[in-house]
Image (cartoon, rainbow, N blue to C red):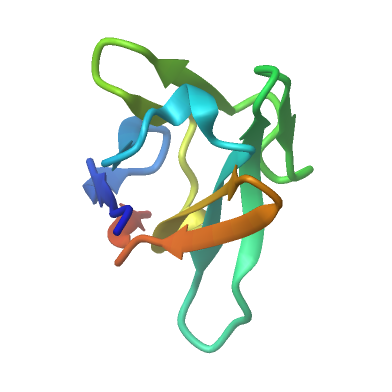
Length: 119
């Protein structure tokens, strides 16, 4: 069974940076897409950034200009570089992966990693 796992969360001050990593037990480059979502306390989970099989990234408006998503072949990971962090970025960040095996699509969520931005 394919597993995904996030690392890299932590506590950072406003304006600081963190790099999150989503690793998988399946070749990242064969994934249909890998996305980052986040959920703050009392709020619904929201899309942050994603990268499709062809390598094209897309971002939520809140992430544009501050966050960068990329794929790392050596680490078989999808990275989320977060710069200029704000207190409103505080949330549990989760990785979502989707892939096809034949005509069947599979999905997997990671457990999440906490990001806390202090003011």
